[in-house]
Image 1: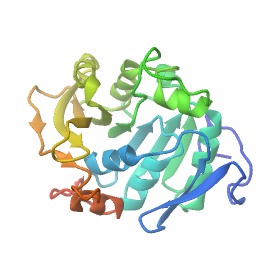
Image 2 (image 1 turned 60 degrees about the vertical axis):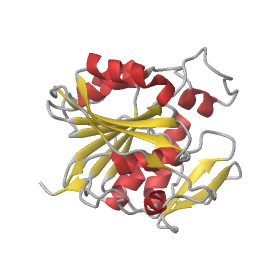
Image 3 (image 1 turned 135 degrees about the horizontal axis):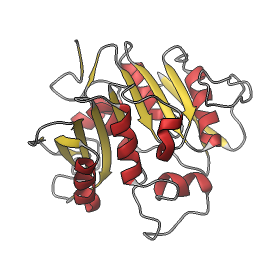
Image 4 (image 1 turned 180 degrees about the horizontal axis):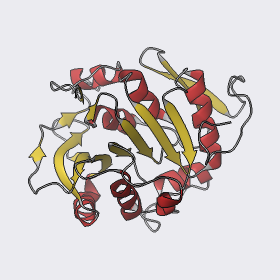
Length: 269
């Protein structure tokens, strides 16, 4: 069984890789995870978001739309005092996420819950987490080509829940002064900031992500504080690649599993 009352039983998590999966690694093999060959697969977005989140020792963190569990695994691996709960609606991805948790020996600090963010109150009590992290679907249902693959379709498009649903769930889960961090495309940054305020999550930290120094920003990282005062810190931009298509030193550090920013993100209380 998953260590969560809302999650169903699955096959032995120590079983070998299935024929429709790949076994992938992060941080020079320190994290291993199964992913569907044709389904939704994590990208650099997840690593940047896990690095961006401000956390404090001993906190309970929720990951909304956890997918295969990659952000929960990264946070638990990098910050041994944290406890993380991944929340995912798709049963197949819930099962794979839990197999990944056990494969990495993190079952004492990471749980996976099958739940719908639109009805989060059915599964969790209010203000039960110090912070929430979320990599929500980026596209509206009418935007772009919709993948025939169910995993990709639900993860990329707002098929079952939209941005406002994830933000309302995050606001429900954290207390006043609790935090929620998200990654989102810059094309929808106004939607994100407006929706955060509507959910009583005041944007406090913002960082633009550019593929190259001379390219327009493609992603934005934002962290909001529930009930926070107005005023935002706009951080220096993050560049992913150098001119030679090599990762920048900051991104290389993130890919190595170390804290890339000058300010330690998991702070002592």
